[in-house]
Image (cartoon, rainbow, N blue to C red; front, top):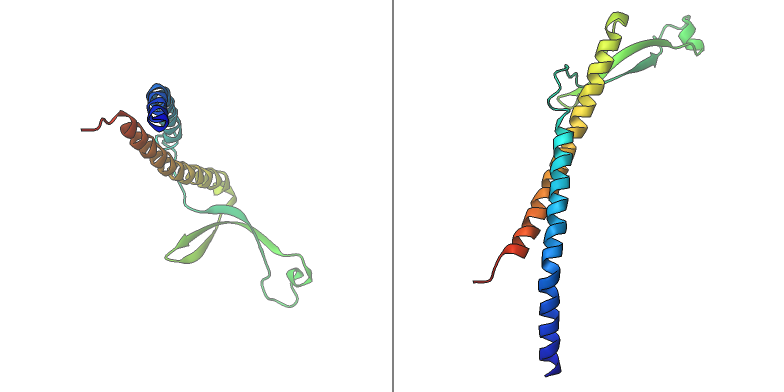
Length: 139
């Protein structure tokens, strides 16, 4: 008898907390959708994207009488990117440096936003499954 009353008590507690849990899940879903919207703002920007990173490349030329053999390396700004599994480098003329650096940073922001969109979608699907489970009635 005691077990039966305990089951009724637990069942009544679950039905009271289900609307609260449902409300929390819906709030979390709204928050996820807001985050998705703000993350997608990067996608709707119109600036150009350049795949790769801009950095200063320092190297030796190999001539034994050059100053680089004593430690003063030749320096240049390069754009580095991966193509078909190989790293490619392109020297950047000074007049294009600011534009390429900005476009490269935009590309990085875009890729991070794209990855975050995938995470948000997984979170949204999980929330939708939980909401469905709470709302679904037994036949």
